[in-house]
Each structure stands twice: as C-alpha cells, then as structure tokens.
Amino acid sequence: MATDNTVKAQMETWEIRIENRLQETLNDFKKSLLESLSKFQQDRGSSSSLHRYENTGKGPQDCDTNYSHMKSPSVGGL
Image 1 (cartoon, rainbow, N blue to C red):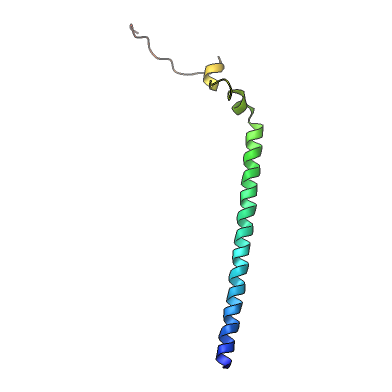
Image 2 (cartoon, one colour):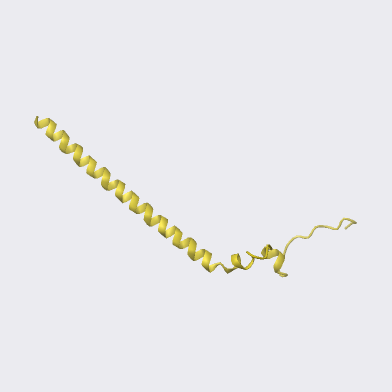
C-alpha cells in the first residue's frame, strides 16, 4: 500500500511537471506569434513601396525610369 501511494505521488508530480511544461511552451508560442505579427505589421507599415504600386498593376520597374534592366535585342538585327 505504501508503494501504491508513492507511485501515485510520483505520477501526480510528473503530471504537474508536464502540465507546467506544456503551459510554458504554449506561452512561448503565443509570445513568439505576437512578436512575429508585430514585426510583420511594422515591416508592412514602413514599406510604402508596397502600397505605391498596389493599385496601378505596375511594378517598380514599370514606373521608375531610373530602374536599370536588361533590354531585349531588336528582332531585325544587332
């Protein structure tokens, strides 16, 4: 009977440890998720170039004349 009580006490101790560890893991996950969301919102808010081209259907290379890009050779010759 003493052995049964010892085993039960050990099981309860392990159960409490597992619950505490799960709660810590969940809290860490929530914190990480909130930090990631906050960083994403800050990055998106500070990136005005995303919004600048959003409604035009053009990318920065279509709107910016200083954009350096490779031109296709003409069909008639070089």
